[in-house]
Length: 219
Figure 1 (cartoon, one colour):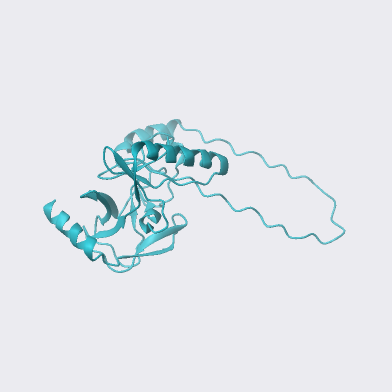
Figure 2 (cartoon, rainbow, N blue to C red; figure 1 turned 60 degrees about the horizontal axis):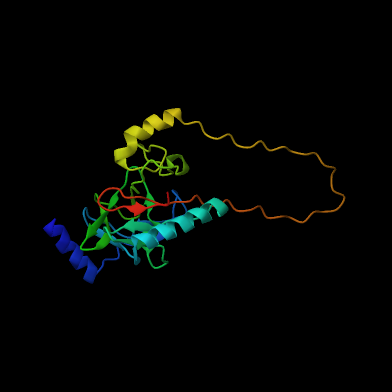
């Protein structure tokens, strides 16, 4: 732990440029290794605004309401300590773009009141950086996992919840998709204007405490 704290302190003063943002095959944009990253290296700091637990809950509930209304909202709030959380929704916090994986190559580590995304293994250049968001099983079926790893459990959840998740999946019946009725219409006599189809809304994301540091999601 002492050696890790020393490495964290050095990275705080002269942070290495280990990462770069690119389009992700997992979900939208992601963060990738700009160069080979050694195991246990502090890759990128998760930064943002320190807020009270009450303000954290208010923001999470507001985003939950937005998600239900629009289908698009994301929660980037990490548990920091007993009194404060860290809201990382700011654009300058590129660590918020790191995607979840059931087979992650990074983890979130708290060190001296700061949160670092740290390499769990040696990571080759060009590899997408991921960590396990550590969701609990509340509303588990609303958070499908798209990581595509060999041991993917199908939904975003902390490893400690996997045994119970497997039981829940056996009982789970997906909601049937509404049937689409196609209505016949006469061929138009005049050319029609091309209408753009609506874009698919992004799935709401958020996380809760898990591992050494974890995010918080609206319940």
